[in-house]
Length: 338
Length: 84
Length: 96
Image (cartoon, rainbow over all chains, first blue to last red; front, side, top):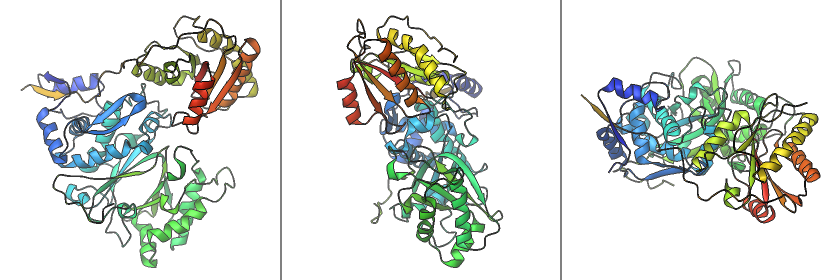
């Protein structure tokens, strides 16, 4: 049984105007969350409406599957996207996802949702050319659903608990997949302990996102040295709450990937090369230590199309990158799942 | 709020730019009228203040803090003083 | 055709207070001042200066200072115990 308050409007226009007046949207139109649609979304996850996905203690908020389903409908998701949204909400509401700080901060941190596993192709989650931008329904609406949950359920409304000085376009939506077939790299979720046939979501709270453009290097070391320089230009400070669990994410495009595939470099070898160079002591104002506890805290994701020789650096904001499995009724648990 | 609930009278000092979010937490916690001391410009939030600015602000806020710990002030918003 | 839609929010903002606010003491004489430093900006230097000013101008009996290990979390359990057992009045906050 659904618990949310119901209201009736004479038509779609009246609903939309009411949604704007009540602050239920991010500024873009929303789809009415009819009880029938919400029920259909919940059915794809097998979750009861009152299943708790997480809490935000500071805000006295408990997020349920029903909350997530309502906001997923409003975001424009298809019903089959909903289990991915559930995994993203659970990841964000993990203690080390740090909802309160990352959604209330002056810095306006955004939340990257990285999808791995077979569900990417089932749902057409884009991971090739243009995948970080507009034009892909799954990417646009899954990322937006998380943000609407953060706004409507977790109360991160600008001027209220969201105190961002500028905020960020990435706060509308930021979701993409990993191009797992680009080469022979181990996919992100497998590196993090999940089976290749499992689907997962990794949510990474990001403080800033920088393009490491390097069209001169022709070998792995050259590209990685550029990543080190771009990352150390900003540095990543330590935090006692986050301890040694802080991550940096490199979303590497094809023109950089090819040097590693040609030379037979694995992600693990890249992590081993990067880690001591990133964590070396600060040497100056724009050569700062990157506070990463372990080489595996460096998350490398293949994505994007051909053309520009660039890799995006996603710097963390007061959270770990948290991975959660996408669960659907009828899915057979993998024997190698963690 | 947790200190108040522990029976310890407290004063919260916030910058004007944090006032709304601090007030939001007070509302969520069931104390919408909870009083705070607000520091205003030209003190810039999250900036480095000079020793002189800090000394001035501390000197001027101390009587307000003492009064609020004793419950002597009315509960309303009052901006902090400007630096000398 | 009319539309029935569900409220996407977690409900009213106004929460229910767990207890009343702490009763205020008749004077600061003999009271011990707790300081909760969040580590942002100048908070520690400022609260130190404010505590010094209050010690000089009132009959406070001492200061119990705790510095949060991170802006993201409450004081550590040990610091919280030290604060709640040692302080009788307190100053918190400052996002600056």
